[in-house]
Image 1 (cartoon, one colour):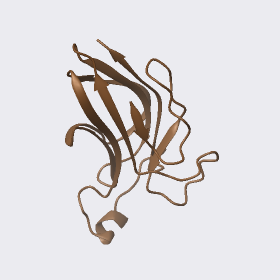
Image 2 (image 1 turned 180 degrees about the vertical axis):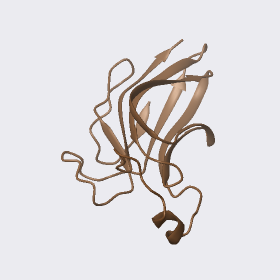
Image 3 (image 1 turned 30 degrees about the vertical axis):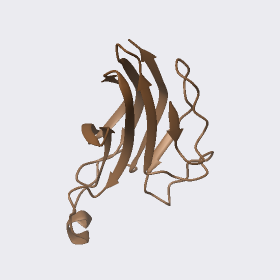
Image 4 (image 1 turned 60 degrees about the vertical axis):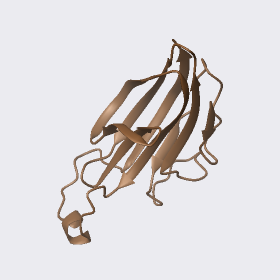
Length: 140
């Protein structure tokens, strides 16, 4: 697979784990080791003849309709995270062939006015970020 994640920590080859990756639009969030904050990460994955599984962990601190994390495969949305969740394991089953998997932080996905957004009461723990870790791919 070939990641496109800017200056984030390096991603390792299949079967190994990737260091934490932060998805956010917030320029005020201080993440320490993160040099630049990316709203998107793209992985190009070539699944074997029997397909395969892309596994990852995510800690979500988003809240719809303020923001969401969307997961796309080959340009089509296959999943989204819309709330505050502790570290959780996820997986995507991929058919044989080449696929582009995109993880996107989307700010204001409902296109609400600034006035409407200002009226939303954010839950405890909200920071407008999602952390990803443990990304690995395995052929089936």
